[in-house]
Image 1 (cartoon, helix red, strand yellow):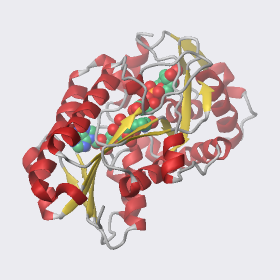
Image 2 (cartoon, helix red, strand yellow; image 1 turned 180 degrees about the vertical axis):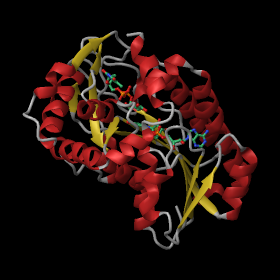
Image 3 (cartoon, helix red, strand yellow; image 1 turned 60 degrees about the vertical axis):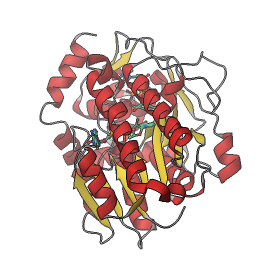
Image 4 (cartoon, helix red, strand yellow; image 1 turned 30 degrees about the horizontal axis):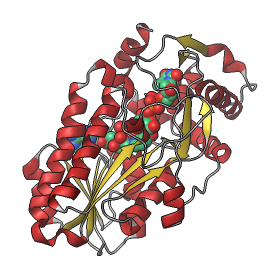
Amino acid sequence: MNKHNILVTGGAGFIGSHLVRHLVGKYPDRTTVNLDKLTYAGNPANLRDIESAGNYVFVRGDICDAALVADTIRRYNIGAIVNLAAETHVDRSIDDPSVFARTNVLGTLTLLQVARDCWGGEAADKRFYQVSTDEVYGSLPLGGGAFSESSPYAPHSPYSASKASADHFVRSFGDTYSLPTLISNCSNNYGSYQFPEKLIPLMVNNIRLDRPLPVYGSGLNVRDWLHVEDHVEAIDLILHNGRPGETYCIGGSNERTNIDLVRLLVRTTDRLLGRSEGTSERLITFVGDRAGHDMRYAIDSSKLRRELGWQPLRTFEEGIEQTVAWYLENIEWLDSVTSGDYMHYYDRMYSGR
Ligand code: NAD
Ligand code: DAU
């Protein structure tokens, strides 16, 4: 891949903001353009520290808007598209799947069509990179196996069904139109700037506010946690050194049950708040299970490690400590993103459980 400018979609969200900051810092002679609709999950404040960098451009807009996408690709001479723009919360997809189909499926299809048309016969050194999820592979039993690039697709939630559909479209554009595509399927990320509807920031925020800590079902579901900056480094490697047409699985090899993780968050948050460790255990509340709740995810990332030399650099213990500390040092950020209709959403989501 040559040294074209990069279009990141969804760059004002959790992973996108870390990726944009990384690209802007690492590639000063290339422009990184961030196209983001700024839904409830997108927040320009996530990128305040780099917003005046000379090689950064923000475009507010929708990936479903073909004219805007085409104009952005041409205006900024874009040669690589990294698509992170998506509706991402499983519970919201159960509540209202239609926006997931629109953004995640039709939005990705729009980007693919516009990239194909703008790049035409010059596409060979360009890249279309789809950032996808391990949830497309469905659920594993407790205690055995891991997803890899050859695992069959078996999505269970409207969210994962929409991401799976997008992956199929991406692959089809490689096969049908020779668009140089890349896909990665990553496990659960954690770190700063994650919207507090997701497990880790939701728990930290509720612990500090002395609110109930809702644990779905038995609490024995397992997730494989990876620090967001390790994910970003994998995306950079795959974008620049991955083989077009290939898929790469990314995971932390770091499985935890939800209840063990919530207890760790309670201990860490209590300690950092100066409370005696475990005070907030009493807030743990088992609530009704998520519909279609996947039991376990685990990722075998040996292809990425072997072919591109990637390995996660952060340990979970250090990463969680730093992450909890970040949320507690950024109460203003937490308060700002949980204002507006957040509590309305939160109460509706949890009152039925
Ligand atoms: P997020 O919800 O924090 O951010 C999504 C961003 O996309 C927001 O900035 C939002 O404004 C933007 N967006 C939404 N709809 C848009 C549209 N129609 N046009 C333009 N922008 C739009 O998401 P995240 O957790 O950072 O996830 C980013 C990507 O990574 C998603 O594609 C997700 O499926 C994938 N992923 C996430 C995880 C994870 O653990 N968070 C793991 C694997 C893969
Ligand atoms: O695996 C990658 C995926 O990880 C991404 O593709 C998704 O975009 C991202 O949201 C995440 O999905 P999960 O559903 O695994 O994440 P979430 O934080 O919503 O939930 C993690 C686990 O914790 C899950 O088993 C449900 C449970 N949970 C979640 C919340 C919000 C609770 O027990 N209580 C809660 O309040």
